[in-house]
Amino acid sequence: MKTNAIILTFLGLLAPTVFSSPAEVDVAASCGSLGVMNVNTSDLPAGVDPNNIRTCADHPVGSAHEVLEKRDCEYGAPVGCSGGYCWKQCGDEGSGQWCWTANNGGYGDWIKCSTSSQCNTNMACGIGDCSACGCSC
Image (cartoon, helix red, strand yellow):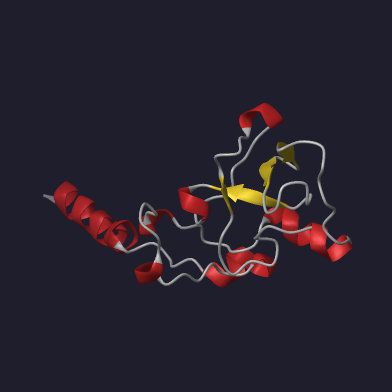
């Protein structure tokens, strides 16, 4: 009987730890200077999954790039891999404009790569409230 009492006491002490909900993540703090992705899900185009929208708005490489220098135009290739992320040319042909690519119609996670062969022109440009998003140079 003493053994049962000890086990029940031990379980009683563990219960708040085991059954409590996980601590909420501070999204703004986790995104930092990348900013939080704010999207009105009722305005999403067809085919975009509202459950797969990225948490942070800005591109990890793009935001650092803009601080250092203006985005250079790219005339050499229609797609590429830079800093571990895919990009593609966009806009008027020959303009050199390009964008970072993202899954889920441009609203999802940034598309990662290790070589340019993993990137293609069918990938969507990143969309959202993002200073590095969009087609420009």
